[in-house]
Image (cartoon, rainbow, N blue to C red; front, side, top):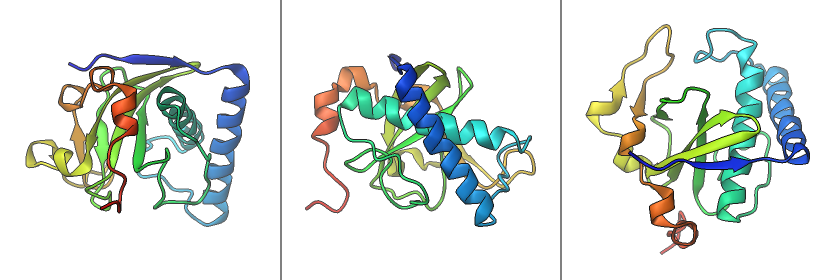
Length: 173
């Protein structure tokens, strides 16, 4: 089991993440992308976007990497250097990988419970997209995805933040 790394966001950091998450949700609504098949209650989309932004900020803070707080950038990195962040509110939640997720991207799972964001570990998409974790399309859980359990994730505390910072970047030779 990976060791959790708890990052506490300050009030100004939480406000910045909340603004970013709100901008993401409003932009999605404006662009007709306001339906989220993975949320049973549409109101949770707001919380999902805010917690997602705050989770990205927490990972950036831990790795000491720049966080842009991007809006409407579905192919860019969540954290500079080829890192994607996925969040959950469930203590035993899984890291969800989608078919379009780049195999060479490194995904980090965060359990969100503001102001504490608990980094649980990470995995390259290619290593998480295995049959044992795959779930087909489901009317409750949404589109097909790989649901990677926390015990399959690389322990970032053992890996050391500096080693994550030195990981090869996507597109690097």
